[in-house]
Image (cartoon, rainbow, N blue to C red; front, side):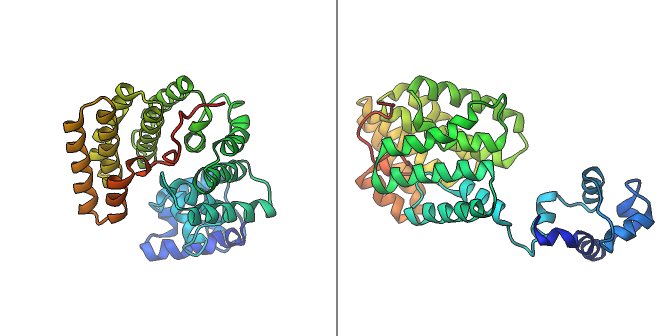
Length: 302
């Protein structure tokens, strides 16, 4: 356990006083005031039900409280999770190495399922981005899938992991898995994390379909990506979606429409001062926000 958690009560007291709440208001029916006083003195610890109820009365989530308890910083595991979830669809190799180091450091101290999976995914990305070795990347992705495929049900953590290894599967399986995930994510309608995950899946599936020259089907997902990126205000995803649209239209010999989509993408990237993405759009649109852009062959197992 992180040492910070031994001071759970003292931090609760400080937050409560800063908010101007009384012990009675915070403890309410959760526990007696005398026991709550002992809690704030770190003489006792609450069970999880009482802990969550107290946070509710303090108008605070567990995530925020844990962050404050750890001196406004992430603990080692949450750092790994944060780095992985924030890894965009074309991370530079230094970012991947940072994720590898954070994962390795934690695993050297204790075993953790999801951290091990993330490390394998990071190694896979390294093989894709640095070595351009698709076969080696698939070996790492397969190690993560070996655990995931045994599970009866996925939750957000597993959806994130699966999203990082889609290149492992045959095209038909990729489409089937993506459709199922997009449907399951609808249950998380009030979670911003789920909205961002949907955008990432839509972007990944469109990239994979374009690699297979399945332009008509890819456009179906690109249209969703355009709509949801616009609604969510995600400018990079919105611009990248126009690049995908342009690639599909070009593949369907609709050059004039394709150029209009490229122009829209460049306009968006210019508005957010992303000259790097503008340059890629001009020189090599396959690489725009696409971890699979280095390959000129269909992305399917040998």
